[in-house]
Length: 217
Image (cartoon, rainbow, N blue to C red; front, side, top):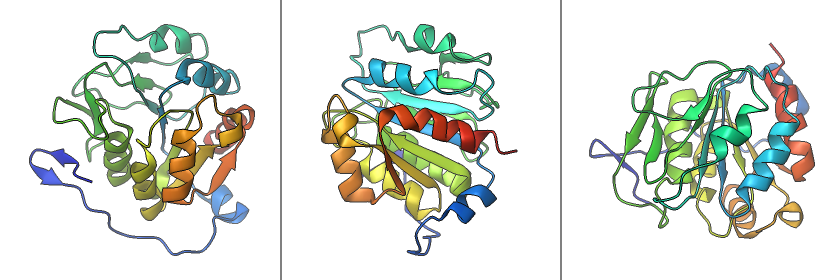
């Protein structure tokens, strides 16, 4: 897969061991951010997930939902009812702040810079998508390493599967919605086959699990 930023390829490094992620590992780690990828059926899935998060969920959440370039996203309005922090379409050079929710704008890739700020890009589509889940996941994994939680939800293609594998290789925590609970199961199935995620959970359990991980500190 070819992911470019400023003419550079991103290459996986610092691969983790193949040991399973245990409860001890999870509870000993301080997480810094959550990235979520979703496509078809996304509004319903995100509504269910965020309904289980506390209004003061402390970690920043960055979201890519596949959306038509000409369609105005409803996500900021939908998610603002669940969060006391910033909820917005991401803008270039935004600083990623605790408790904020940042949503990829239509027709732009959403990237995380090494200093943990946001970059937007009009570079080529990845997996026929812009924004691409893979682009967000790979760049966020470089910035956050083992402090990142990656989540794949419902969708009708395979975008996000390779990106989730980058998160796992860099020791982050990987979660996929159980295909049987997904409105469209192609994206979760691709992520499971490609990334061998740490957890495969029903949709109604993912928000509560994130809430537990995010409120450890």
